[in-house]
Image (tube, rainbow, N blue to C red; front, side, top):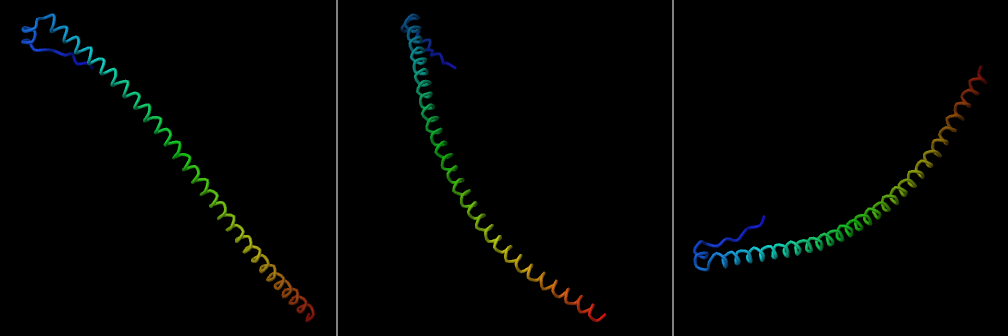
Length: 119
């Protein structure tokens, strides 16, 4: 929204209508020039800011991605270690269970044979 320069009535009376209007036009032209220069400078600064922001966001994204990859690797190794421990424990439990099953079966067969021998 441009602001039009105005001069006092006394200025018009002292210097005349033509000079006062020419001065007002010059002030308005200078104002438009400065506004255009300021707009261009703001656009350049915003473009630099945007480029730096984009660069920093890309760097941050790369850092986050690297940290997630490291975390994923650590979690995978942790799960693999726990899986190996659980597998070893399950194998030990399986061996213990098979031992007790054979003892139960031998006892059952012995009991059945003993009952048959009595009868």
